[in-house]
Image (cartoon, rainbow, N blue to C red):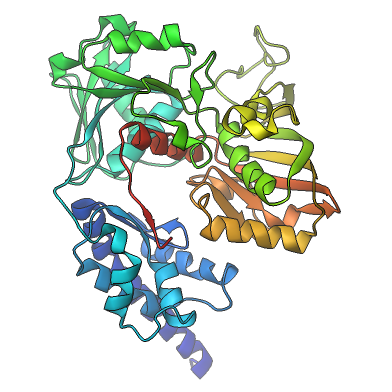
Length: 481
């Protein structure tokens, strides 16, 4: 016989499921038909399962004094769906909590409250024509960028994946490219349908028609032959890293800008989105999105430097092995990297610590860095061993980082966890540049040790997409501010 307590819990769970299931079609229509992305305390709900929606609401208790129920956020979502709004990212969790628990309403109705909070996007116009995007290279980052761009396809898509450029062209190549996009050992199956058009050398994915172009160099490509104009070319091959090499893309007909997904050489701007993306100007033709590690650590370093000041420090990266290493022992031009990646911890160098100063000049000469490649295929960790200008405590530092992750201009870059059980695989698919592990924080006066997790593939790819939007002069506000 079911006890009253058990029945009460069962009823509560059923209510949460009912609300989550009711939210899904509203969230989907807002995203695909109007370009509005819904989140709860930074957790995106687009394409989320009912359980994911419930779990996102559960995380609110990490940041606030009480939990947020789905029956409390649902009216906010419903009211938003009835408003005339332009594209943007709306956090219904923050809006609902503020309206119900923080006296933010001040006597206003929910509709009046939302009208004020979302004033920046209450004058919708005609959707802007999407910018054509070409992925030059289709490796780990290229395929994840494709997934992210396809995910955003629809009438209000601002970036439209038109083509990928790869070497090859042998029999079966197209099917293999499509299969690698369809299935991923780390990130799981593609969320949707993928078919191959062999006659036209194209991949069709969730409404996106992606031309596959075979070429050995940019000089061989004429994008206009495929109806592609003014394209943003994202080079994720790593072959060219300077202006002369990357400039070859600009000589291809139909290409107008280039974004590199690796550290650049020379005077090319190294951008860590959230830190120095304001340096991207409309006239910039070639921009670099820095490295995954630089993206992971720079936002947290900026927050700490702004608040406490950083005298100096050392960054040690515990990094998953990459395709650059050998599967079994074999010759490699770099020291130690020739040894079997899946069997060894390998000490190697990283330029990430020095590269921080390209995005954050005030830390020039203050950081050293090194790296250890470890036998995991994805998700890495940066250990920040820092000496601060001002002393602090574990409680103060963690409270500051939690607030930064929730409310600052770096909220899309920095995530925060208070879990004592989290491990690397739990962070696969994280859309943040880095995740602060608060339970590992060490403070001794002015000396601080911070542990920052990062999905060096997916989290970095999300940062790249943000850079792409800035290069295409696309701006969607995150609300509430």
